[in-house]
Length: 81
Image (cartoon, rainbow, N blue to C red; front, top):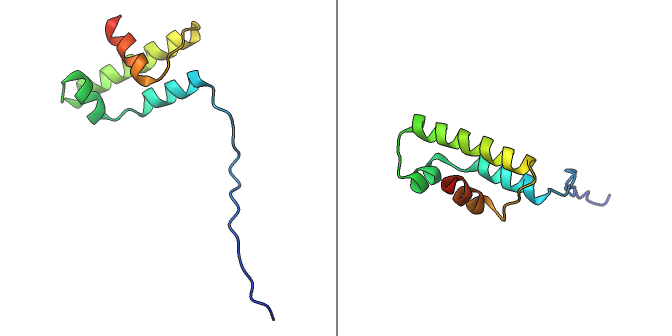
């Protein structure tokens, strides 16, 4: 009897993520440590508030048709507002 071999098949669907959606995903995924470096703050309650404001602001800008090259571009625009 021949030996059976198993091959793993990746079943996860691949989908195109529009650049605007990718920017928002990246903004949501920024860690507290990275945000602390960007802001110079270390208290989680402050960082969480800033992060939430940034996420909402980015979402509103994207909904209005604005585009960002990446999360860094979105951050610089958020800070400059």
